[in-house]
Amino acid sequence: MKIETLYDQATFTLSYVVYDQNTKDAFVIDPVLNYDAASSAISYEQINKIENFVKINDLNLQYVLETHAHADHLSSSHELKSRFPGIKIAISEHITQVQDVFKGVFNIENLKTDGSQFDLLFKDQEVIQRTPHVWVTMPRRLGGKKPTQRLLFSGN
Figure 1 (cartoon, rainbow, N blue to C red):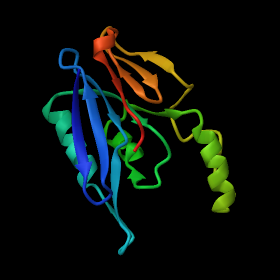
Figure 2 (figure 1 turned 60 degrees about the vertical axis):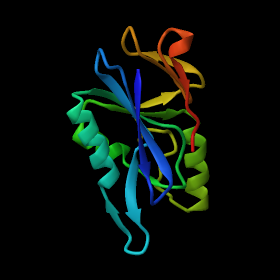
Figure 3 (figure 1 turned 45 degrees about the vertical axis):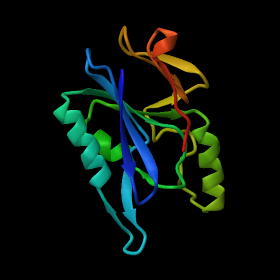
Figure 4 (figure 1 turned 180 degrees about the horizontal axis):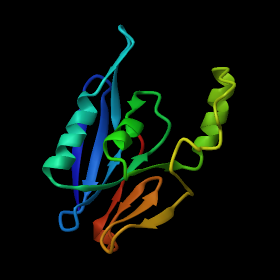
């Protein structure tokens, strides 16, 4: 298993592409959507880097994993899904609690608070088996079947 780390200097945020070199199965963690507050404009520098890395390495992108609701940057997970239509966007089922808070704090009457904006809501420590070599436990532990292949990710 390999990890490519992509740093966004504007938000001091890390995004990751995690992939198996043999099967080419991959997932992206916390993809950044660039945002310029002064002009209220979005741009795609970070997602373009992710897309290029995936294509150059001929990876089979399976998931975009969001570790939490991001206050430090915008997420490009839906833009990534438009570029790779077969992927699923996943986050902890606790996002519904955050959505409920945001709905009240920001007075957004039509905000759905059921997590339906995502393809998959993980339960704590749920394991998703994708291939014989790669599995995912959300929200934070990623790796292979052997303990030496397991990784720990924490939200930024």
